[in-house]
Image 1 (cartoon, rainbow, N blue to C red):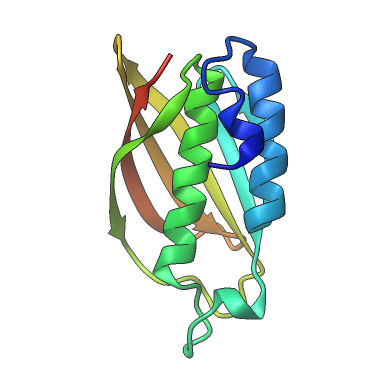
Image 2 (image 1 turned 180 degrees about the horizontal axis):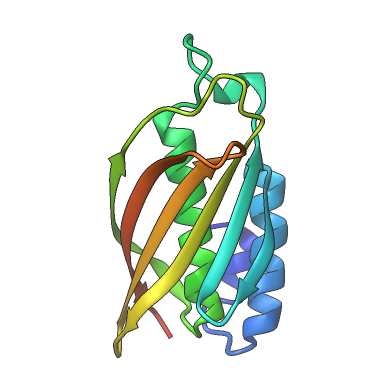
Length: 141
């Protein structure tokens, strides 16, 4: 977690927390979030050559990172403030080597006192569903 985020770990200013997270994730990973609200988030990653393996498809770790960060934004928008506890993935297929962007849609399914359960799906820009995710985040505030 970056220095910017550390000062907000106990913050209740959700809008500022989301703004700082958006900027930090954009700078570190190139992920943009056109939607972050009401327990939902959409994350988009424009694919670069370094994101692709020798088959021309995105590395699994790059794809998983997009899901984890997008679920984190959904978590923040639902009032959570903490970290990932667990994440599971089902890779259904690789992206088309001609794909230029990955899109992740995430939604909080259940909130508890300390745990938030979030589901996500990643597609390429052709609309092909590539993978499905289930994450659990813990609320530290």
